[in-house]
Amino acid sequence: MDGTMEGEVNNVHSDGLIQNTNGLLEEKLDEIRRIFGKADGDPLRIVGVGAGAWGSVFTAMLQDSYRHLRHKVLIRIWRRPGRTVDRATAEHLFEVINSREDVLRRLIRRCAYLKYVEGRLGDRTLYADEILKDGFCLNMIDTPLCPLKVVTNLQEAVWDADIVINGLPSTETREVFGEIRRYWKERVVMPVIISLAKGIEAELEPEPRIITPTQMINRATEVPMENILYLGGPNIAAEIYNKEYANARICGAEKWRKPLARFLRQPHFIVWDNGDLVTHEVMGGLKNVYAIGAGMIAALTNESATSKSVYFAHCTSEMIFITHLLAEDPEKLAGPLLADTYVTLLKGRNSWYGQQLAKGELSLDMGDSIKGKGMIQGISAVKAFYELLSQSGLSVPHPEEKKPVAPVELCPILKTLYKILIVRELPPQAILQALRDETMNDPRDRIEIAQNHAFYRASLLGQ
Image (tube, rainbow, N blue to C red; front, side, top):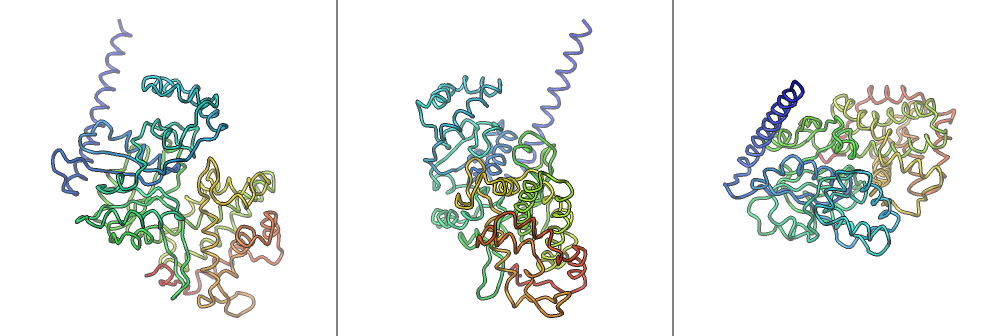
């Protein structure tokens, strides 16, 4: 009797919690709908563009949270059609499905299980957009998501969207949003765009500057910058979907960032807001540069904690040096930048890529889009930062030679990564030799140089 009563009490508490949570979600959704001027019967339309790991997870989290309110919000995701799933991936996917009873039962209920049996046997070709509908991201097979509404026609996906989530790599953002512009020509009210991309390009004429994904979107679509935001933070996509505690910042105009931070916030995913869009975006790209080198060091030293700590000291000093060139108040970025760097060095795809490259399991000839991982954005970021910081017009005083030099001359790790990854003059082992170079300065000296000189160049961020 006691056990029955306890169970009934627990159910009441559980139901009350669910009702309370759902009520709060509906309040947040109604707030966003009011800001967008949505009438009853006209759902808020959210579309994710790009279905890599983070883009898929971000869309799936929204779907999980608001699916009981689909009369008020429609959530879908676009990805290109035609990408096939190879036999080895299909076999692994089948194993994942059968290891998860909840996923297995869901597929059986949806009459979708048989195609994965046929894919496992090689009797059927599976496609990336097809499996995404069932909750499987090709870049993250081991973490099943909720079923998603997938659209493969870009015009159909975006033409009436209120909120667009850019989940594309920075290297594809300009091209895809250039196409999207054609579908928005007749729009009176432009959508709000939240970019998740972490990558940059360097523009050297008429003067050196960094181009970020939000700026690419602005140029490609003519959507005003106040409608374009950046969301980033120290996170691993699979862990966030599995409800590991995480936080992020949404950066941009106050009109949108504050209500969107409330809308996106979940008990396990805390979203803060900040007005400094471009600088946070650039920092998100910068840590990918040094994550590749960290992976190389880990592989070349058999995971030596001492060697990794030496590398960490040097790479963080270079990042601090670079932030003093890019930000007027660089100290404000120290916490977010180090946190994002830390998690990327521990478990990010750029660090993984550096490890595989140093082990010889990957080669540079395979390109920067890797099966099962997606785009390694640190590679293009190495090129962009090196080209930018090589400009003689940005000269800084050399501590020993007492003459002006390009900033990159004080960033030996960045220089070495450029020679390994871009011009391919050196093997991955060179990163270890760079650390052991007896002429390398104490990392503290580089930080002191940055702190004691007026390095800030507003023009680098187009400001």
